[in-house]
Image 1: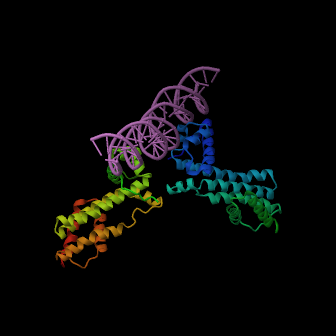
Image 2: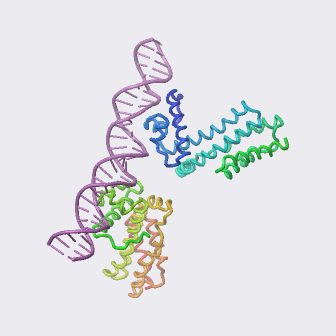
Image 3: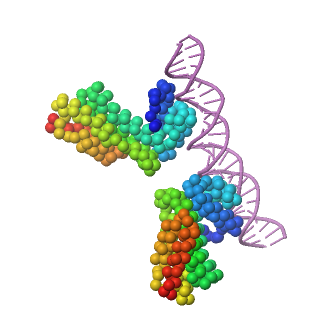
Length: 187
Length: 187
DNA sequence: GGATTTACCGGAGGCTCCTCCGGTTAAAGC
DNA sequence: GCTTTAACCGGAGGAGCCTCCGGTAAATCC
């Protein structure tokens, strides 16, 4: 019904991506006080263009959130290409903490989406598990980290750190290092 | 802290009453789609005047609702002055049904008030009980209605009729007549 | 009844939302 | 490379929200 027969024109896709990125910045910084005209300006498009891509504020918030989620999920594969598995995992933890901070900034906006009947969080846990699993597998295969921790347990651990040390990025870093040492210990 | 030292000027009080009445009409007819500019126009005042009396939409909705509640509560004493007790009670039941219809119209608006942290319904049951009790007492004293029904039970009965026959005013009237006969039977 | 004080009024103007439509440009075909 | 088609753009304009401030009038005092 809403499925599109042919992909967006290149300029349309580029504008859409710009809008989503600008929305991510605005909603995580200002929450519900972000204005659509401000987002359009930041994205370098007209307000009519923003409305053609995203007919409601809620749809835009959801797209912005999913974009942040996709970015943190995609990062795991990228990092594995560039770093040894254990260092890739450590770097990914930093990305995840950053993602949590932006998600916190968007909390009111996301709540408004939920109140309107949509579920912006649908499948997010599955996606995150799917992101972290390759990091764990590669680390275990390389003998760099233990092989007996589940992706779910690890995500909860990192999330705990991200929540507990939300106000102190350095402290969060130290706690992540400690967590990494725990993972290395029985490799 | 917010208590006023001296009563409003006469023109201010008159404007305030006009605004509340116009708000009652607008919110029960259009719910959350009622506009403040439209209410001000209907009340015959400027938008600045409306904002001075009611700095937020929620405060106006609450005032409009409480005005409707006060009107139906005040009606019981007025009707007792004009009619024999049993007829006064019957007439009051009609007023209450009308009040319920307007309240239903305002449901979304009242929900928004509740969501903002205020309770527009505070004390409404006590006020309604206080309105119907004199009608019951006068009827019992006159030997026109039974003396063993509580105000609370009667309100629930009338409310049941108002809800069940929400779409058929004639049917609601017939059911209220039936309820009156039940009240008269053991007088 | 007139003067004074200040409570009160109301609409202009700026902000954000949202739609509409004339103009632009990307993509496909020849 | 040119033409054609239609996807796409974007900003003007109207609606509603909300504040500010010059003007009005109600209430008090003499």
